[in-house]
Image (tube, rainbow, N blue to C red; front, side, top):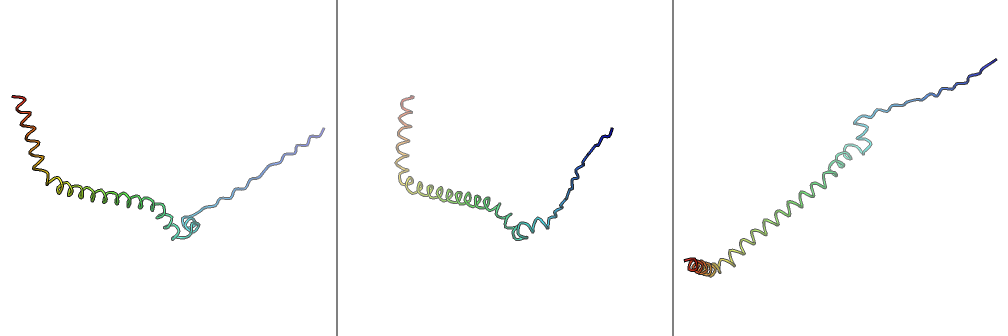
Amino acid sequence: MRVSLRVSFTEEKFNFLFYSLKDLISEIGGLGGAIAGFLGQFGVYIMMLFVVDLVMVIRRKYKQKKRMHNLVIIGKKLPFFKKIVLSRLFAIGMQIS
């Protein structure tokens, strides 16, 4: 009796590719491309910082203008307000006594 065992083995080849930093930088367009990509990612944050700073400047100017407006407009009416407040305080004092 004859038995034929046909066994086939598969061979697998592995190819390892090693990349260096120089290879990665050349893939994205050289040193200029690497710097442009880096700045492009932070460009959004720089623009947001600019807008927040601009809002703070506008807010400061608004508060200063409001203060000046209050000094000019309410300053003229201050003696009248003082007279009303004193009369009301005097009326409350008379009611308590």
